[in-house]
Image (tube, rainbow, N blue to C red; front, side, top):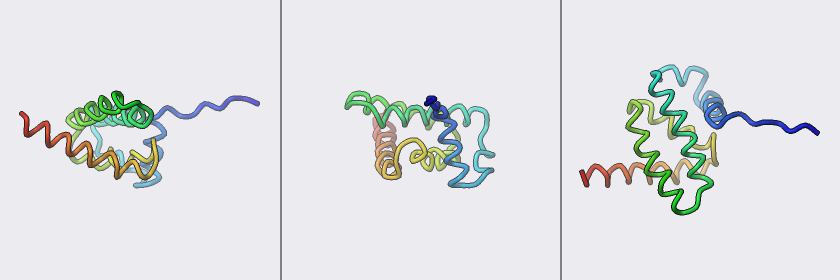
Length: 108
């Protein structure tokens, strides 16, 4: 039996987004947005498998990666979470990140 390699995380997430939102959903992305989304999906994967310290670090990093993409691309980041983890994680992770960003902005 041969071992099958799965797609890299970002490719899996992009394929999921295209099936969920349509083939042209990534068209609004600039080169920077595209790279930020790739990083985003690897950090989502880390968040899903990490221990408590790793989860907290992944959340901080995810909140910062949002700064690297246009606000109009944020819905793609949110919608792609189930392409890496599970459907329930979209509603679990996204509000945590928005709250973390609000706390960070209030502290600044």
